[in-house]
Image (cartoon, rainbow, N blue to C red; front, side, top):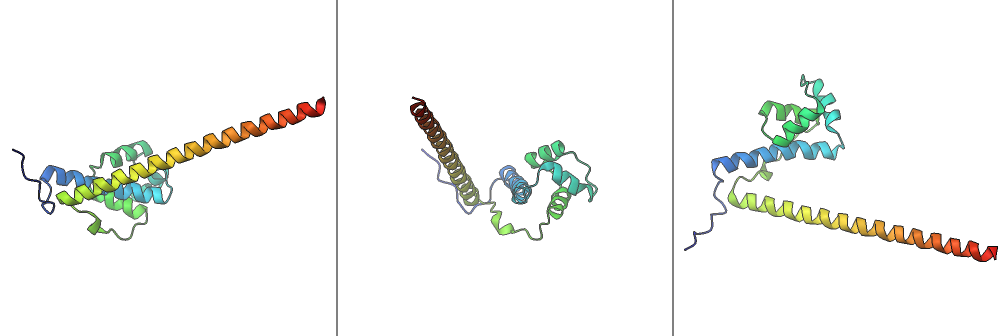
Length: 145
């Protein structure tokens, strides 16, 4: 006998709730950093003005882990120039997690498709260059005869 499906509006269990919140904080920093095309080294330089003396590798690890104090989050967001945070996007319910996972899966599929299209385009351009080179070589050989 199977158990009933979970209530989509129910809050996540405490350990999963904490993981979702950490993921939200991590994505907040990484998304804003990527939007500005900043490396962790550049972020580290900005954070120095706020008294954070972490090296780029340490920042990368700290952000990737997602388990950092709220003060660190706020300082990073301030250094990144973030003025507002939309907490409505943080949905700590079972349904919210499922929607986030669905979005991430769709985003990954889109990125994979884009990579495949790009690789196909590169291959097609390479084949076209090789054909042009062979054609030029044939023309050169005909002229020399």
